[in-house]
Length: 549
Image (cartoon, rainbow, N blue to C red; front, side, top):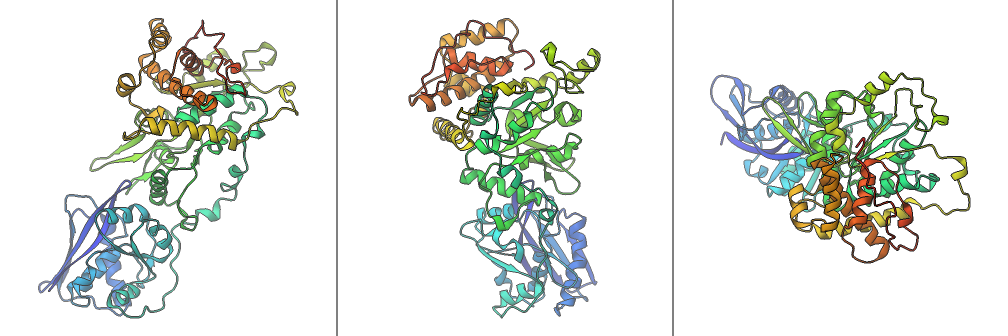
């Protein structure tokens, strides 16, 4: 029969779609036709397949008409990983393989002219899509064997060449072939790597009690955080230690994040599934595409997606380009990013904890304390610098902290400093309370709960709601800000419940603490005594203004 079908997978962002690569070899004018919304890389694949067959001592039907159809035809296909599926479907259509041997199998890999294989990006989401469609076997390049084996129940066959694929389908002994090069050499270039961050711990930071508590609340409820202060005050040190207080990823989060890194080409299969929350800190001169995703050809995940379920740190935030800053609005609200083009629209997960840091002025020396103020910037320059933080973006940031340099007198060598492991236990317990509360719903943390559901299902107490309403009446709190205060209040209550060992719902004290966290006002940490007893807020008569937040 001059017709055969092989299976491959097309990626739309991180979502895979099973594709039938149908090939017809018939008598007629000697030509090759490619149909089914195939891009240039697939049309070029015909030449790669032809030379791979010839150089592997397999037959190319040069005197016949070869038609390749990528079905469904309405879905856009791109990438060089379709080469292997094109080759085996052609061999089956030409009678060199039995068409039935291709059933229940997905073929992934780019072919070289010599018939060897090269690695492809996004193997993990491809195999996940194949498993979801009921496919039980996959052929792919040997270096990506470990990556594909992360999908349970899938028979994964790693090969080096087209000749090995043909031999495997026929049941013959596999011929020798040179090893396949790895997909990326990024690891060879990261001279610092991630090992530097692995050595960081909260115990390294002396003092900064209010800032540490704000970071703990942000980590527990996934609340965006802004750190503002003069240079050298510890903003970056705080941000880099946030991943150390985050719990390990759940199995669902781990698989989702690993698939995103596979798509981006930054996954090291030898390390297996990603189990720790990632940390991404793009430079302030980074483009919009590198931060939110995009690129020419296939859409690539940006830094905000690679930091999914982890921390995205934007240092020197006012220096980022305006289009990058404004592009953060959607992921801050929805936890995902949609990249729309003329002929496709791709949605990628982007539920990272956003942490931004900024100096009070371009020189970084401005301070509210007159003796410490060594700023040389003109007031107009400072005003223009601060104006780069647009109101809609700042309104979406839940917590504001003005970080001040720690005085040497605050360093008590005899005072016990909490480690990251101790803080992580509280954060994990608070997150577990949230998971239990939102069980069966599409969100998991307080910072992700939609406004209507929050007001209807988990409202504040009447007294606490009156405090929020009073702030809205004075204009110090916007409607969006009121929702974010309510989310913060729930996280504060969750952390207090962990400390006290009893169930607490947000009340007046929690709301006032949330207002202080949002407005950047000082906190009364006496409410969090080591014995865990919650104390009344002595400054609660003045809940404060929303200020810069």
